[in-house]
Length: 275
Ligand code: SF4
Image 1 (tube, rainbow, N blue to C red):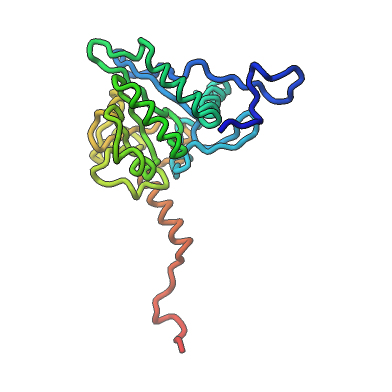
Image 2: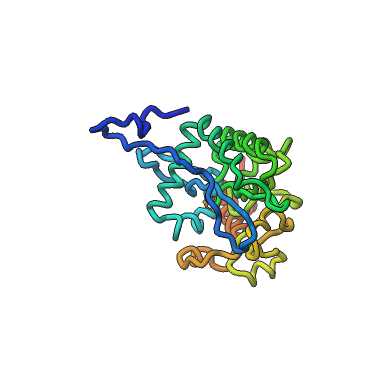
């Protein structure tokens, strides 16, 4: 539903106190990939929580857990004001004008640049930051994917319950998703699910029996069940992560939360006798 506080750039009158609302003209951007032959595009919304320029709060990663403390998308390039603003504008559009956003996305995917080249499909990574923030948003994306059967869509997500409820029963044939550890729903990830974990470095990833995603982002779609990512070279984040994987950090956080909820009592023999 559109928010009346957001003014259209064409209607924001002179002297208006509201910032002009400018819809993004292009929704999908080319992704810088480690492999030049891959045609990969991306859809970005901001990571975790913040405020839109008009002051409204958002949380685009509602199931983020420990990952948010070391999130690669809350540092570096992603925090350059123009980049963050562009991602916020994408979120604002999808959230406030979902019908117009969805129609524009479907139309954009019909452009020649999304057609297969020599039988190689074009890929779209949905979210290089952010996540499925609502049921409606995910359902709309599933419709978008069905409208572009020649394009392959892939995604990492911590919204395990939402994907299992909404996407898994009848997934579009061109959608591959992978759960990633470090979120509040880690315990819903089953052993056979495609999943990813973030490790301090390549050596610890290999030692844990994971295959590295470093050679190609498309391993998210086509890689084995256990895909590992080496932490980005962001000193603050690396310090917080220490020598643990995101999965291990989330497990430890869950255990701490459980012990706060259910404090351990001493052995029964030390308790005063009940009458
Ligand atoms: S879910 Fe992903 S984008 Fe969101 S806070 Fe966690 S690591 Fe960052």
